[in-house]
Length: 328
Image (cartoon, rainbow, N blue to C red; front, side, top):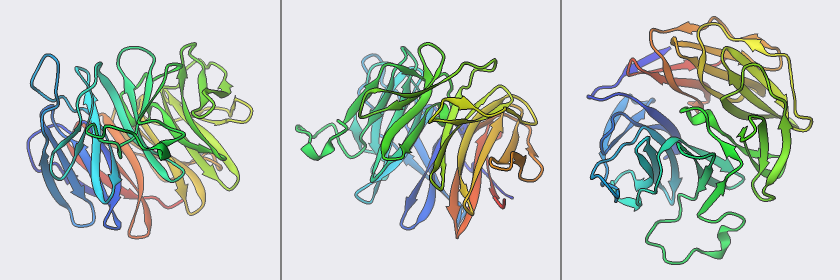
């Protein structure tokens, strides 16, 4: 395990990972003012980026506690907001504002890949609305190019809602050839939402522990929905809407989730409110090694590839980035 402490003042709130110049770069927000940071885990290099103030209707300040990142034409674009600030976008290197703050607070932001496009998925703090923003479209563009179809620069899904502050509050990706979102619906049933068709492809039954964070993982020709609620880890079939028997995760209530493939096997990683981090072989329904037990809540957790190895990176209230290699 590698542990790196935040080398400047502030509290880590959220982070995302982009591949820039051929290697993963962590992009995060560490306070409630106009700053973001990057961390290169290969060189342990940290950089602070000052951001322009968004055009806010009532205050000249920036609250950036939720953040997603994407690479557009070789440059890193970040988007996010906070409880009291709507969604905005910036060019990270220059700090230039690309999209002024929208109305309403933001509880989570994450980047999602839909085929050959990356969009930012945003959950609002008021109303059951999940939004999709295209980071390649700047506010200064007067006309949207026609090749944005089937997505506009902004898509709103009123039928879904985010009930978690983690980036995994909504899962996003491809289900076979369909772009989908997975989240709680207004009737508290988990929906697999077809973005193009504007309808639910599958509806999962209610559970005693209502799921609050989600992921999609594809292995071979099978795609599964991964969800967490309380201390339960769930794997569901989007074709039938059925959940497998829940797995009980060691430690406290789960606060964040990610999932992906490691050597061809579907793996999920979880971070908990008591600082516990677990990795699971989903097909084998078993833990991969002993859980790590920290001291404070894990806010964000991600899987990525570094130097040919699959790794998991977590961050929490301790202001320490921790990285493990995953070996199923």
